[in-house]
Image (cartoon, rainbow, N blue to C red; front, side, top):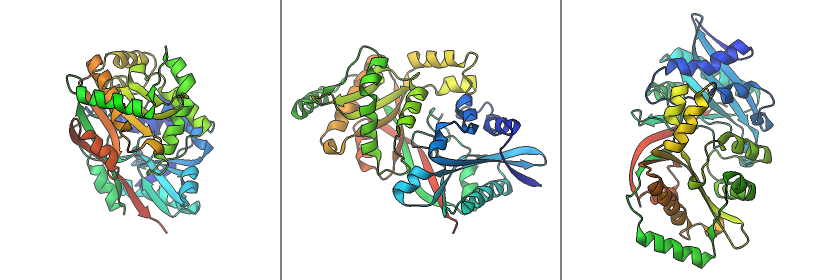
Length: 373
């Protein structure tokens, strides 16, 4: 017998967060969420409740947890797009269609009660949360920013009535051994033409104090129309800085500014901490944060987190300048591989950019959709 319950008690909250850790125990490619971040989702003071209604469900079969799922009404996203959508997130399940169907039925019924007419996902609270179901590339370790799931998830989701909405592609990039002098000269010429220069600071703290608002303004402008994106509110900006500040390095954050020090473009990479998070099972205490700091300073892989350019400068060669600067940093630091993370399959501009480098499309992620009217 299958029983689906809404997560309410502390015991249920722990079961919700612990379930994937058991399901993927000792799996070579699965990278867990940070345990403390996931437990904080149940606190009403969590920033995600600013613009979301959230529900969490567990599925029990014969008294044992066999699956989990979250439902999210992202009000900012719906208001921006004039839609009535519900996101599903954190779906994990044994290979049992009855369990999967019971979980999706619970989310769909919750969505109907809120007068929502579409369920889609997997998507998180904002576009910096994990999104998209892995459907190709199961042999590759996830980055810290990506979902990983068993290959049977796709079949379960489709048999619950969901179809493709859009795919993300992820690339593995091999940096060149040396600088490309032609690209260097071209970058210098473009900087001079547009009267731009690279933002600098003596420390990450100074850098963020001076440029963080400009960086988020650029991302808001550049990403506004993309799938799944929500505005970066002041509280969300502070939360993101707090969440990722530990990982940021001046070598991997590239901002271009004009003569007034206004940010016009940004590219951010993060040192790969996937193996460190695996080792500590997502728990920073008591010693997990030490493993992560070691990975930050000694990794041979980094994750290309994002790139954003103000519309005024899009198509003017600025993307190449940002990427060239990051590649130069990668060469100097001995980075051997770069993970591109997600690029929408419809984003031809960024997809064409990777062609400049030795690259391989090694993962594909899918967001699904179902009309529940």
